[in-house]
Amino acid sequence: MSQPNRQLNLNDGNRESFKNKIKQHEDNIKFLNSLSNRFAESILDLQVSLGRYHSANVIMSENGNGAFHTEEETVEQILKKENSAAGIFCWLKANAQISNLAFAKDAVGIVATLARVENDDLSRILSEYLGLETMLAIVCSTYEGVNALEKYNTEGMINCNDGLHGIGSSIGRRINGRFIVICLEDLRPFVGGFIPNDPQKKLALPKPKLPNGECPPGFIDYAVNMIHLDSNNFSFLTASGHGLRETLFYGLFSRLQLYKTRNDMLLSLPCINDGALSLDGGMIRKCGMFALGSRKVVEVKFPLISGESDVPPNYIEAEDMVRKLKWESSKLAADIHREQQLLDYRKGNFTSQP
Figure 1 (cartoon, rainbow, N blue to C red):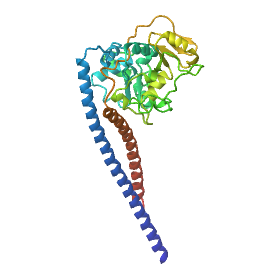
Figure 2 (figure 1 turned 90 degrees about the horizontal axis):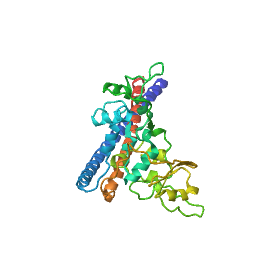
Figure 3 (figure 1 turned 135 degrees about the vertical axis):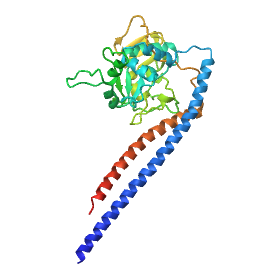
Figure 4 (figure 1 turned 180 degrees about the horizontal axis):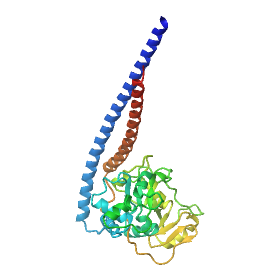
């Protein structure tokens, strides 16, 4: 008689344990959702504050006397490339036709629109170094976005009625030839850290040194650190927590050095490994490979920083906080999804108990 009672108590204990675990997962999801909501509210508040400063800065720029090559001008040049993937992408974005597309949530933008630089000489030389094809490259966060851009039939041929090709056909444009797409999750990020207290989080790259141990005269900085990221692009993070500077732009420029003059650059040959540029048009592609001749006409180039590049400390702190909160929010979403899967599993097992 005692054996059935022991079995009944054991089953009751199991059911109680399942109930407790289900309750624990439900509590975890409730807590994570409340935390996610608080993060969303904080991000919204900070973005409103940043938006006010940005609007004021734009007004100051428009009222100023300086002439700037703006992002709008860069986009206009891209739109002129009507039969390019970048041209179609920018047309869709400009006409608010991109939000419902499969690659929209994953597409970061066109390389030429993702950074700004200080002056026209720098814009020209960096843009010429990358070349038009790379400047027009579409940047995606993951391979999911890359895969959504182009589809193939059973014979491996491009399906012109799907992906970006299909969208181009629907608006009377056809993509000519190949186009570059950069997948950020597949790039090996820079892992050396950032310059302490730098508002733009420039990479902590060691200064080049001549055989005598001195930094070469005329050296300005590494190209990857000469670009400026605005608030939207600065706050972007991959799923692994890396920004555009240490992924995209480090992948494009690596340790490319920048010098004031061609003569400075040539005198620094002993410490140039990954190429160098000079503001007066000098170009070394990589160690031992020189690019001579006159400058090319740059069709699409990086826009310039408009107005003052220095911003108040509280603005910088707010940008950094938005960046961190967005990253934390993405991690919370993954935690909520995992807890929901565990909850569904527990509930399934609970209903199947005798």
